[in-house]
Length: 430
Ligand code: UD1
Image (cartoon, rainbow, N blue to C red; front, side):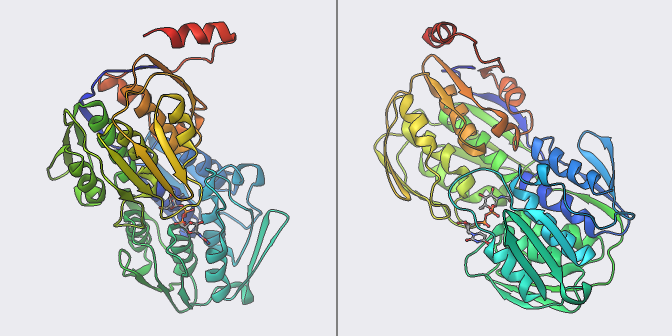
């Protein structure tokens, strides 16, 4: 529940990157030894993956809340736990890591946020090129490497895919010979996974460019690794500061990773000052309209699109957002409309008539980033906003409510009122 109208002020510390952590945890399965991983974000997606690894027989110990040790030395092949796998998107990385380690994998098709069809055909194309037979049947994925070990291969990705790039990279690490991934994704978490694997003895080169070369090795050894800061978490606080007209120092970030977000924010009139490992965001008194198209990195991230859509409801004039990655990532628009936003959606394009005052309402977190967008909307709206289904937000933002509170937001987690009259009373407060 949010009482809107408070500008955010202060400093916020960014956690480790979710999309790096959800790949690095399954990649620990490739390691014959103890991996110490620091800066793990405390979110439900990482909890889920650690539980999956533990069910597979890994020893998982918390050294402190954000540092873990994973020992997969004695893990033996078994089917991945189906009930947990289907709840989370990143479970697809178990296909690559199990195939790499055991030469076989049986998993379910991944779950996760629903923004349209999210196939894994390119992951499968890569594994198949490396000599695996992969079948998808009744929602299960069956994969088996011919002769028990994958072979290096050249894989061209028809579409730039973060998941396929990382999954093929993992599978190739212990394959026999050299794998080349062409048209690879270049997101910061791709480089992070490559750095993690290399620090455990892998030979991965070119991560961060569109061609990645992996020379397979026989064994990975234990080691220590620190995950990069979360680009999207940082971007979300930057937009929250800009949208509320506040001033926030976003700490523990890599400013280079945020350039695609900073550039667009500057166009809105927001002031951004970059320091070595932090950025200061000063909201403008009037936000200007901008057009945004989401693209693979270094373009504007699709995972920042709903938050940007919310900010642009407040900007003067008409803004256009083009979603370049997913078919169906504008579901949150219906929720914003309940708060008074004027947005037309046509396929992958949203036209936002800005300069509207948002008003509090009961809205839903349709998915992880849409949920963050609703919270930003609530903080900017007049009156009270209640955001339902915050379990989506807990999948990817560490202590979101606590961090926003420390920046002055009037926000708290409440139980959903039992009676409609009670809810009406809450929403009527202004
Ligand atoms: C990852 C991120 C997600 C982010 C997305 C794009 C994780 C766990 N999730 O998702 O937060 O929004 O990158 O930055 O890291 N595609 C295919 N076939 C495939 C794979 C993908 O057609 O085999 C399509 C997808 O439907 C989508 C596009 O390619 O249209 C990009 O998807 P991809 O980069 O693979 O996203 P995810 O790995 O699912």
